[in-house]
Structure formats: C-alpha cells, structure tokens
Length: 164
Image 1: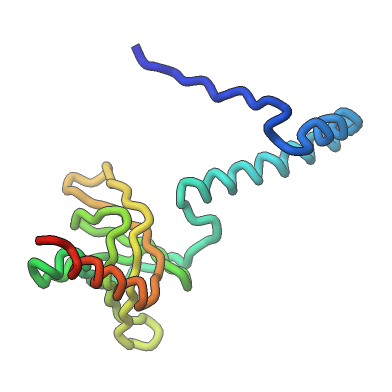
Image 2: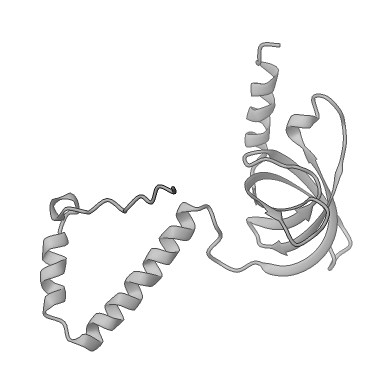
C-alpha cells in the first residue's frame, strides 16, 4: 500500500509576520482576496520552478545540429556525441541526444551559428536530464547552463588530484 505523506502543518509562530498577514487578509473583500490568491499562486509556481531547477523565462526555439563532449569521458577516450539543440538563451540551452548524460556533468558544446556560420564553442553544466518516452530508441532532453573557464579548470584539477 502506498505511503501518502501529508504536508507538515505550518504553525503560525514559524513564519515571521504570518499572524499580521492573516489578520490583514481578513479585512479584504472577496475581489481583493481573489487578486491576492492569484499573486500568491503565481509566486508559488515561480518558486516551485526555481526549486526544481527549471527555467522561468523563455528560450528561443531553434533546430541546430551540434556536438558535445563530456569532460569526465576525456580521461578515457576522446569522443564527440551528436546533439540537436532545440532551445537557446544567452545563459543556456536545451538539446536532444541519444547519449546518456548525467546531471552536473561538464560538457563542451560546439555548433555552427545559423546567422553568421561561425562555429561556436560553449562550456556548459548539465542542470537537468529527462528521458523521452515517445520514441522507440533511447533519447534524452538535456538542459544546460553556460559556465566560465574557471569552473572547467577547477573540475580538471579535481580530476588530476584523484587517487587512482
């Protein structure tokens, strides 16, 4: 039988000013309460997305082929994996791949800019990996955020200091 956990009850003393907020809400009209409810629900959704590591703002929809290498694999073999970039922003991207990639992997992603034709290279950190179940072959949707060279360098140093 499944174990359904109930959310823990919040006592009024645990949140500063909660008593005062509730007293102020009691004085509002029904229309004003509905507006407060809408704002609270929007805040809860935003906070929930942030807590899950999900993106809040929109990315540009694209369809750009590219390749990536996984930093942890470079120690053993030099292999590039095919990817298809589906969404992009200035801070990250979302792509599809058949390669198993783990959260917190460091990737080097290369693609050709559609507008200029120039090859772009971006160091990225994997923030989320979702398996696609609609396709017969194994496919993953990977969300990454861009990282600086210092992050990659510190990762490489950590790998070199490991005990074999």
